Length: 325
Ligand SMILES: [Fe+2]
Image (spheres, rainbow, N blue to C red):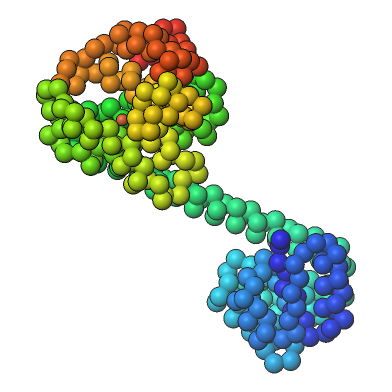
């Protein structure tokens, strides 16, 4: 709610303005001299200040000077009986935004106040938008840094997460998910193997078949990623999407062996993209299996291991829409 501070030593003036603006739905505060006005500005951070000039103790001119030292964004409207041009010019110099001469017309005062409030709220909104964009940029940079950390440990799969992210995004988009959801899936996919930072590099890049113990270690990576990410404040449960990206519809996946109804759609999409990218690419322990075989794999296991809608969207992308990594 917009806050107004009315500063006047005449109680009648204060009450007329207060009643009018409270009735119009504003949060109204009163002060009767400059000193208490300055104190209130500090405390309540008003959007608009209506400031009389002639008051006992600290007058309006001095109060304006003090207010501008602590608050440059509130709009100050001088409301006074003084009509001296020199005084008017001086208040402008000190940072007043408007000057209304008593006796005033209430509608005129309201027009001035509303104009000031809407520009104050516009400014606040613009500031909020800027800081949100900044936050978003920093957040993206953190995600990219995390992605790079994984890939420095596992250079053989360099680019894997990025390509899985590109394909996950395309599948989600093809499935008609909202732009926000598509963006979140991309973000989760780009760090889906984050948990591999826990696995020794020799195992990640081992050129021969993994032993059972080594494979058990590999299987811990969704949980490790979950533990790293679970306390971060994401707008969506990204840690859960990553935790579930090796789960399969028939319960044969890991780490929990979840089945269809318990796996999040976001995780199902990343799972298909991950499978396609991994099979289409060369690995230290095997040559590339190839894109055609990868598409065959998801077709055969449609509705067994992989979500049918996700598989259909993925096949459409490659077979009809000529998608490439
Ligand atoms: Fe993975």
